[in-house]
Length: 138
Image (cartoon, rainbow, N blue to C red; front, side, top):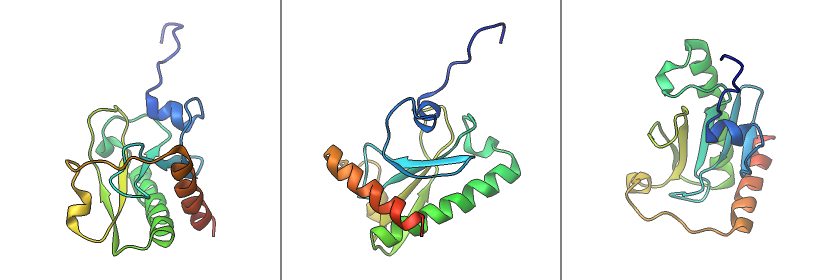
């Protein structure tokens, strides 16, 4: 890039530890952290560490690996926050980085992004992330 340092997007900075986050799980290729504007306790974002703007621009193998990683994170969320299912939503234009929303749900209305987001304290976020990490590592 002609000697210039490539500008990293906010999610890449989060995955690199340059911006604080409430980490739920990670691997060498993927990172999961709590959404700071959650629809429910346990609402988690899963991202590839590699910067890709559009989820379906991921390479086939990488897309498959991301889904398997997200499946493991979803199982941890469901164990930490019992619910009927964990919804998977690929949505969002505000950050140019592919990401999956994993949201504990008991009804379809639980996944309405127009509803008011939860207001949680830093201590509540950390407790939620710790619970998911604990279940992910088992």
